[in-house]
Amino acid sequence: MSEERLEEELTEEEKGIFDLFPQLARVERRQENGHREIKSFVLRGQKLKDFQIKALKEHFYEYAIVYNHNKPMDFEAIFGNKNPVIIEIGFGMGESTLKIAKENPDRNYIGIEVFLYGFSKLLANASKENLSNLRLMRFDAVQVLQDMVPDNSVDGFHVFFPDPWPKKRHHKKRLIQVPFAELLASKLKSGGYIYCVTDWEDYANQMLEVFGKVDILSNPYNGFAPQVPWRPETGFERKGLEKDYKINEIWVEKR
Image (cartoon, rainbow, N blue to C red; front, side, top):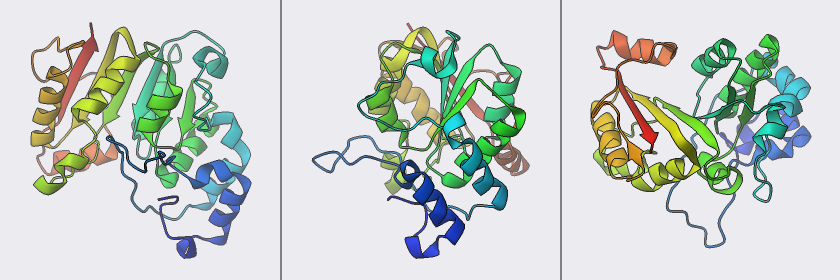
């Protein structure tokens, strides 16, 4: 799918954004055989508000990294320093992403999100805060990792509240599967971490099982991790807590 909504559902302003930045019009690159073993899924999203459109027009090239399968990322060139790099996959509205980046200026963050609404909202907020340690991508995370992120280069991955795909017949669509965990592990530096959070208990158990099958990953807690104090609570998380959902935290490290 090239956009969150059908073309006829886009506003004139949104169509203008795709004209200005054609790089935003696609969120995945088809493989030659039309098939990939691992896939992150794209669904329709919300119409952009004026402040999001304005931010895209004024700050896209300041904050966005454009997908290019022929150009591996040079983190030092992107950020202008050698600070540790953390990649967040599926940042939603970017509430926690923004706060973590603000509170940790000695670390660099790359957020990957396919939904244009969340991508443009975080871009607007990052530009408002004038953050220099945050960059954003609107593209399929699997292809970004496979094509643009060098092996043994990342200090940490954040995956907060990924879609649980609760129906059993949809479990194969869940992001955290063994091939994806192996891909994440291959990109981590030795000692780097993967930090996942979910309020869906059987998905949390699946995550533990999946990471346990990757030999180069270890779980220092031998189960669920305690709450990490620097991760802020999100609006989505608050809604889950109001429904008495348990927040499950998973932290694994590369040996």
